[in-house]
Structures are given as structure tokens and as C-alpha cells.
Length: 441
Ligand code: CMX
Image (cartoon, rainbow, N blue to C red; front, top):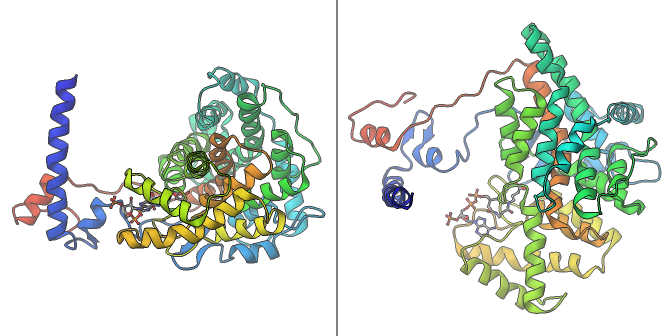
């Protein structure tokens, strides 16, 4: 085995060096409309798909159906006595394209309540994991276990007209969204709270019920969950979780299979898992420095040591955004309102002052500003949720709203199976020498 690994290593190192040189010389050369650098470097900047639910402006940040986060905080219906938007509202907005009324949102709350029953075998699947398993692993397995309930798969097996696909995708999406808070809370209570579970409260909204079933009853934590579930819901279509759900769905895999695939992508540390990495990194910094309130100088030193050890600074940077993420700002505002003196939250703000100039000085980081994940964990810790490995599950529950609304649109518009063309480096080299053609050029 070692021999094969060594052979692979030698080949990969040589190919890596060759590709670097090739891009240095020919990176701007185009195959069709697309440059070689874009093909080799994560398809950055290629517009190649339609996602109706939201649009990301590199300078301004996300807009959901044209509305910015502050606009949504103003316009979307709220819970009684609350001031944050109910996530039912953003789902309605993404799905229907219009700001919902109070009645529309109440209807969604009651429909999701009615559909929230989770079959017992799903809990058996979660229970089968050792406690050491990561919460995202349990969460994804539970979503897969719920696939037994898919209306789309059952109907497809019997035979349906392609014009009717969207209706079954819609039903599955509504069921799945309705069930996710129960599943997420079950994972949380099993792993961290002695397997003692809390039954849903039939009078609560979707996010409020999630907070309740996890065991948090502070009204301002309910507000945090409503805000959290709203701002994490969607970030246009090219990010890994949205794109994966869309891609897998394009082969007519049902919403359970498609969403589970997207969640596997969210579980990567460069995407959604960054929210756990941020708090882990701050906890490690506090331990290394032996203080709960590191000074800006201490933070700068720690950031430099993180970079020197070949790691990224979690929560900073973005493939599309070029300014501070408005999702970060919304959470900062929440922190200023509810917990301005919390030392961990203040540390997040000190990191915000410290990191961008350091990343800018590296000269290669395209966006030195914080993303959504830089802030979320500190707010959760404030309420006692220290179990940072669970944070990506919360992100995932929210992300269901956007990617499943998009999946309904994908099938309603009859989008094709996704199948871009790829090349080999040998075919590129031959093309550069004028010895071969590349399809699409
Ligand atoms: N810390 C250190 N280096 C960073 C960095 C960071 N936060 N962000 C980017 N860089 C580096 C890249 O690793 C890359 O280095 P190499 O050329 O040596 O490979 C270089 O800067 C250029 O990268 P980029 O074009 O600026 O960024 P990408 O579009 O390739 O990647 C992202 C974007 C988010 C993966 C990257 O900024 C990153 O790794 N950030 C930290 C992880 C993180 O917070 N992810 C969450 C993103 C939001 C989300 O999806 O939830």
C-alpha cells in the first residue's frame, strides 16, 4: 500500500508544479468564455446556474428576493412581543417571491406543526451512533433515514408526468422542513443532555420550538434562533450546500437525498463547519493565553501564529463577498442589544478590528473581512450552548429553507440535469500546443 501511496505522491507533486507553471503562463487563455485559471481554481466568477431565491452582491452582501437583511428585519412578520423576523416569513418570501402577511406566516407555522412528526426508525438510526460521532454525521444520517417518507420517490416509482414533479417535491420539502427542528434537537439532547428529550410545544413557532426542544427557554434565545434561522437560510446558488442540493436534485433524487448531500457539503470546515472552528479557535486562544479577555496585541500574535502553522483564520474570507458580511453585522447588532458586556462577544469584536489588516498584508487573501461564521458561536455560548460541534447542525436546519425553496423552483421550471464539461491536463497541454481540440472552444 505504501508503495502505491508514494507513487501517487510523486505524480501529484509533479502535476501540481506543472499546473502552477501552466497557469502562470496561460491562466488567462480562454476555453470558450472561461479562462484556464477559472477552470483549475474552483470555477470562481463563472455564472452558470439560476437560483431564484436570493442574490449575492460582492460589495453589499445577500438580498433575498431583492430585500437586504435590515429590510427583512423591518418587513417580515414577528412573533408576539418579538422583534426579529420569523423564519417562516423568509421561506414564504423565497418560495412565493412576495413579503408574506401575518396570516401567511401563521399558516406556515401551523402546517409545519402538523407535519412535524418524525418516524421512530429515524430516532433509532441516531441512537445507533456512538456518542463520539459528530452531530452533523447523526443529522445527515437522520435525514437519509427520513427518505422512506418521500412522496416524490413513491410517485416516481409508480410513474408520473414530468409536469407534476414539482408538486411532490413541494410536499417532501414541507415535510422535511417541518421535521428538522425535532431531529436537530434530538441529536443535541442525545449527545449532550443525557439522552433526555423535550417534547415539542404545539403553540410555538418553528424556530421557537427548536429552541424549546433543545432546552433553552430564555425569550431572547428564541429571538436569536429566529434571527439565526432567517439569516443563514440562503446565500444564492453557488455555495457548496446550495449547489450540491441543486446538483443532486437535478438527477431527480428526491428532496431528502438532495438535502442530505448538501448537508455533507455544509459539514466541511471551509463552509458551514467554520462556525464551530471559530469558537474552537477562540477557546484555544484563550487557553493558550490564559485569559478570557485577550488584548488586541495578543490576538494579533495568535492570528500570526495560526497563519504561520499553515492554517486559515476561521470566519474570515469569502469566495464572492468583498466586504463585511451583513449576516455578521446583523449578529453584531443582536450582541450590542442583548449582551454588550459579554467578554466572548467582545473578543469577537476585537478580532474583527485585528484580523482584516493582517490578512490584507498577506497580499493574497481576496476578502479579509468576516463572514457569517465569525460571530454566530459567541452568541450561542452566551446562552450556555458551549457544545460547538453542534453549531453546523443549526446552520443546516436554517439552510433547508433556502435550498428546498430553490428545489421546488428547479422542478417547477423543469431545469435540466446538471452536467458541465471537464478537461484533463493532458488535453489542455495538447490544445495549448495546437495539437488537439477542446470541446467548447
Ligand atoms: N485565513 C488565511 N488564509 C486565507 C483566508 C483566511 N481566512 N481566506 C483565504 N485565505 C487564503 C486562501 O487559503 C488562499 O491561499 P493559497 O493561495 O495559499 O491557497 C488565498 O488566501 C486566496 O484565497 P481567496 O481567493 O481569498 O479565497 P477562496 O475563495 O479560495 O476561499 C474561503 C474562500 C471562505 C474558503 C476562505 O476565505 C477561507 O478558507 N476562509 C476561512 C474558512 C471560513 O471562514 N469559511 C466559511 C465561509 C462562509 C461559509 O461558507 O459558511
